[in-house]
Image (tube, rainbow, N blue to C red; front, side, top):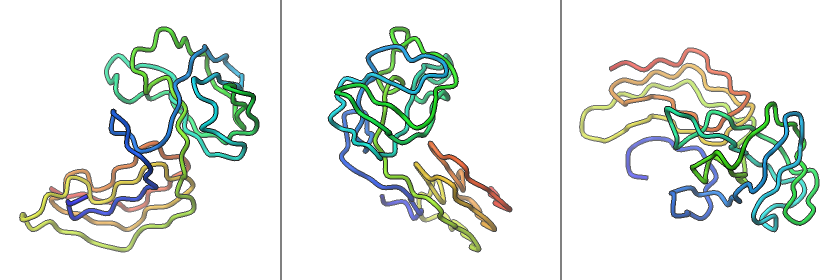
Amino acid sequence: MNDNAAHLSYLNMTDAYGYTDPYSVVTADVAAGGNQVTVADGSIFAVGDSVVWRLADEPTDNVESSYFGFSKVSATDGNVLTLSTRFPKASNIAAVNNVLNKSVHKVIPLEGVTVGNFRAIEGGSGNCEELVTARYIWNSRFHDIYSQNVGAGLFLQYSHGVTIDNVVTDG
């Protein structure tokens, strides 16, 4: 990426939608309180894999669902994955239009990362939309970061258990 920013993620292959992690489409409804999900291709996953699941369209943002979660694969049986966590609510898969919002993504999260104690000031010659972009970052901390004229400053996507202290973006 050519924009003078720090990008924190593990990247794999890129698909037609621009996603860089292997995923499989969910093919059956999930039950509230359940921990099993049926996918189109279970061969992508193995016991112990970290996954992010996305299970609903949103009327205002159909591209990225706010109903997502993190888990580990605890068992596989063909195309049925048993996850280490339970789904908080049911999902009607047939009603979901965007294929990415009915999917399970295999990810390698960054865990236990600490980023902090720096200042960044964009002088106008670069194109820094986000100073720090973090995708699939779990149980980590961002602290004491100051940025000026850089757009978002700190951009977290599909993150869990992240602490943010004294992060300021000006301009």
